Structure formats: structure tokens, C-alpha cells
Image (cartoon, rainbow, N blue to C red; front, top):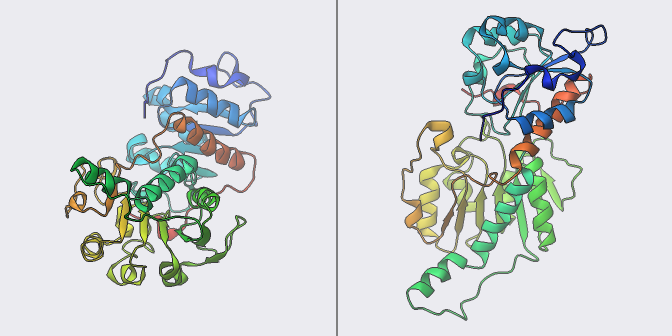
Amino acid sequence: MNNSHGQGNPTEDRPDEGDGSRGEDAVSKPMLVVVFDVESVGRRVIRETIGAVADILYLTDVPAAERAEVLRRADVIFAQHTAKDLTTDELSLIRRVRLLQFYTAGVDFIPLQALPADCPIATNGGAFAEPMAEHALAMTFAAAKRLFIEHHHLAHGAFHQFVPNRMLGGRVCGIFGFGGVGVATARLMRAMGMTIHAINRRGSSAAPTEWIGTPAHLDVLLRVADVFVIAAPLSHATVGCIGARELSLMKEDAILVNLARGEIIDEGALFAHLQGHLAFTACLDAWWVEPIRHGVFRMQYPFMELPNVIGSPHNSASVDGGHHVALQRAAENCRRALTGAQPTCLIGPDERMV
């Protein structure tokens, strides 16, 4: 993400404040404090989304001596990575905010346990749902149509015109994690003629499915899925939940697509399963050790040497304009909190992972 922005006048995103002083009408307004750097177009997106319901301050524009007072006055905090955005002393100042809103959907790499326990926290669930859903469909198509396999064969002079590939129509797409990304993926898979089976924590959804269950029904989903898409958050409940036993329940020619976090799958178990089941395909956009979360990319096993693996560098959300859509969706949730409405995507204690 490009975090540079024009300096300009820090009050440009607070049109009600005029020369910077808080007038009569502004006194009663709640305050949104954005604690990470946002470029000028992103600031305009946030202002247009928040409207006149709140004043907006960017902590990166505030002199160091005034940061503590600004944080004490904040009603809602919008953060990218609190361990980097705020000092340890500053974290204690946000105890009374109505909401701490994160920019990203996945926050497992942020030390949430360092935050005040009574601070409501929301992720930006579904922030990049549409591009991630397209990525899932693209990887699924590549696997079902054997595109990389036959490309390799053609490059070596083999012309396998009559080796069959697969249709998606009439098959079952199982989605583990039926939030924003899961629902968007289901929409595309249904357009391909697939039947949608899904799991979320509630066991229900307003989005259409032919079957939906809770995590307790994971085995049921694994057995029936021709395509199994992982879009669940990493938590104490989901870490390592797809191991050797779970993989053994899946169809011999199933396609597994992981858009979420590598740690949801047992890495060694998946490698062994791929070696022993060559008709099974793993499409991996999420890896176990990645640069943003761990500072380096590393595999314990040579996945990319296997013919039944399709990999991408966790770039399913990296599309033009995606950053501003994510800012808008996070700002919409901030606006809910600022106006007294119930925010969405609030996390529970089990998701406050170290």
C-alpha cells in the first residue's frame, strides 16, 4: 500500500472546523481518529463516507506532544496495525472508545491481547471480497481445466487433446467461512452452475445456499465438496483444523482453495496428501510463513515441485482500486459506531490471538 500523502492543511478533512477551532456546532460531534497514514484520495473516500456525523483527525498530522490528548478525545479509532501505529503508552488511552476498527479483514498477525480488554474491536470483513472471489474462481478453473498441467506438457511436446478435464456445473462448492469473501465466492460459483454448501459460526445466512452448517459439521462439508474454499479467519478454533484426518475425508479429485491463512491447514499433512493423491489439487493463495506477517516467505515442504499445486503470492486482494474500497467499507463501520448503530464484524475473545 502506498502510504504517502500530500501534506496540505491538516484541517482539510474537517470542513466543519474552519480555521481549526471547534465551533459551537462541532462541540457535540463525535471524533474519528485515523492512526495510520492515508494518502489524499483515501482521505477523501473516508470523509465522503463519514459525512458530517463526525470530525476526523489523522494522528500522523498531529504534533507528538498532542497525540495523547487526541487519543483521549477519540470516539472511534481507525487503525491499520496498532503495534506500529501506536506506542505502548498510547494503547492504554483508547480504553473508552466506542470502536477500534481495523483496515484489514485478517488481524491474527496483530497483537490484539495488548489492547484494552474492554475495547470493542472490528475487522474489515469482506473488504476485498469481490477480487478474492474472482481469484478463487480463477484458481478453481485452472485446476478443473488442467491449464497448468497441459501447458507444461505442451511445452515438452506432448499434446493430450483427449485427456478429460472437468466441468464445474452440477458439482458442489463447499465454503468454510461464509462471511463477505465466502458469500462473494458463492455468487460466482453458483453462476458456474455449482451447488453451494457452506459453514459459518451461526449456521445460517441471508445469502442463498443449498446447505449450511456450523463448524461442528465440517466433516459433512469435507465429504461432499468437489471444490473446498477456505475463507475463515484464523483463530484458536480454526488453527490446524484441516489435518490428515480431514483431508482423508475429501474426494480423491477434490480441489482445495485456501484464500485465508496457511495455518488453518496442517502443512505437512497437506504435502503428504498431495503426494499420495495426484488427482487432488491444492490452490494456495495463503501460506504458512509470509512476508507481511512474518517478515519472510518460507515453505517447509517443496509444494511448487508438485504437479497438483497451483500457487499465488497471497495477492488475491491486490487489484487496482481495492485499497479505496477497503477504506470505504471500514469507514462505513466506523460511521455505524459514530451514529450509535451496531458495528459489524466484531471479534470475540477466541480471535484475540497473540
